[in-house]
Image 1: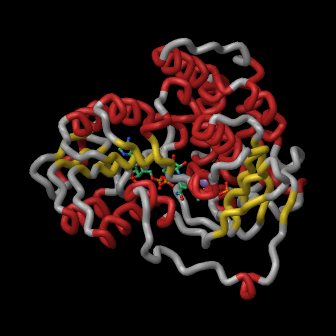
Image 2 (image 1 turned 90 degrees about the vertical axis):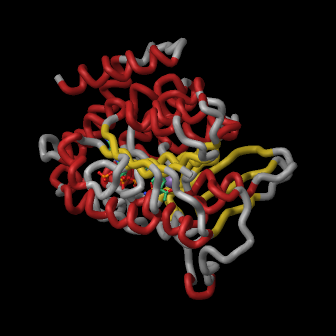
Length: 355
Ligand SMILES: NC(=O)C1=CN([C@@H]2O[C@H](COP(=O)(O)OP(=O)(O)OC[C@H]3O[C@@H](n4cnc5c(N)ncnc54)[C@H](OP(=O)(O)O)[C@@H]3O)[C@@H](O)[C@H]2O)C=CC1
Ligand SMILES: CC(=O)[C@@H](O)[C@H](O)COP(=O)(O)O
Ligand SMILES: [Mn+2]
């Protein structure tokens, strides 16, 4: 298989599954973490390697290594693998998702931004989501009439902070997720609740449903719930590890133990909370976004610019949501008709947010 973003949180977990099931790795794609990449090359012996930048080429221990976004697309096109794991972060992941579909490959998709920005141009039948909540929803699906679907949120790094302190929180505090060890961008998205907004959009595309909501479950042990029309609710419970969703996304089915089951007596209690807009201002957009998924490309572009500014120390934590809300307010009429429109809108919103 091909692993895009092999040195990241999902990438490393994917290679853990590849090791466990002795899966062949044809292509590794990474950014700038050449040390980890070289260790992966040594262990998995890929035929082809792609990295982000030309200046790092000489440091990669491989005789077929290229760089840049086009090289990622070429590597997908020239490969014989049937499966692509897309664990790139952000808008960068969209073209590889489209290319993999075009080449008839199955995609194990962690890059939720692909669906957020361009869900209506993506054939969902080619995707297996690598996202704990959507894996949970998929696991719970039965041949019964569904009323609504719920995903859970941890509440992110600042769920227990006093509201008045949020204006002055640090980058280090924001990166301290209570339950999951993930890349920086998604960890900030969790703290603002933008990750959950993305996940509602992701669920809308994957399951073709709009009756969707999210609640906070502070231990991240329940990942998803389905309310059936008969009045019963089922919940997906698993320890907080991405290895289970990754194993299913790659293998299709799995009867071996990937995780230890949750010991409910040891857990003893669970706590649920409503997602309040005072703490998570982005949640004001929930209904508007679910009624108009075209806004995903706007929200994603504004959020990527804002998160990058926050991580560079240029803006405060609360400014992230402010920038997203402002961009949605300005671009609430977008109507992408082609995939090219997605790239145009993304560019325009980024220019607006950078200025
Ligand atoms: N982490 C998690 O548990 C979950 C993540 N997701 C989603 O999965 C995706 C990946 O998340 P995560 O693994 O946390 O992110 P990370 O930041 O940990 O990993 C991102 C990966 O992309 C690589 N990369 C970045 N820029 C480039 C580039 N220009 N060219 C090539 N490679 C590049 C990085 O390389 P390098 O590090 O070498 O620079 C790294 O391998 C995101 O869309 C996220 O929302 C979804 C659910 C759970
Ligand atoms: C592991 C995973 O799927 C993440 O998307 C996780 O859900 C993020 O945590 P939050 O629930 O805090 O957004
Ligand atoms: Mn998730």
